[in-house]
Image (cartoon, rainbow, N blue to C red; front, side, top):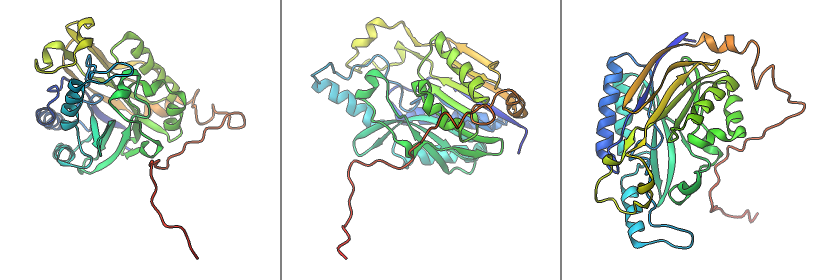
Length: 315
């Protein structure tokens, strides 16, 4: 197993509500990371086409509006088919740069949208996808829920890699499901820029004895096109809607890079993977520090479709 890996956390701004332009920006960033010798890169939660901060989509309890449906359609039309043209372009970019790429997108399938984290291998193949298990608060009007079938772990030369999205990381059992798969590179793309999120990143690193890569968008009100409607939430937000807070944390909870606020910036760091084993000397939550005689977690990883088609056995 390789002892060190050069990683990048990309704190950037999407071209809001514009999938194709945001993809072009991604391709340029990925190519530059490849030239710098980066081997693993993480982009923020729903970087494509954007995190729709401040938008109401014309809803309140018991009511939807025609304008809100139009805004949802705009978001839907700029979302990502998996697989599709966008995943082809991202895969090719990862292959040309020779790196593992993980990026947050809004995925669409049959009219439902999902908050999804895509993983690409250095050969350009889609190595896995994770759909957010539980959208938070008003996010539930936009995104459906994932199930246990999209909890992939990607085997890399440096050990297992996986991720949870934003406040999924406050679900102890979801974290435990990843720890049980011996994840040493833990990805945490988010839309949370609060100080308390930094405590979360450091806690996960210490709890899982893993490297944690936290990644957020940098967004301002000026980045939103003037023709976007349903902006009721904008009035209460500052001009800098999301200052960022991306960071890289080691298995003992120490910052390797960041956090960075108030600008677009890519954090690059060389991680010594031997630090994982060394950190587990005194604590390994699913190993010598576990109590399987007292606690047990069952994870259902079967797909959960709402409709099943089949033919009864008449024999």
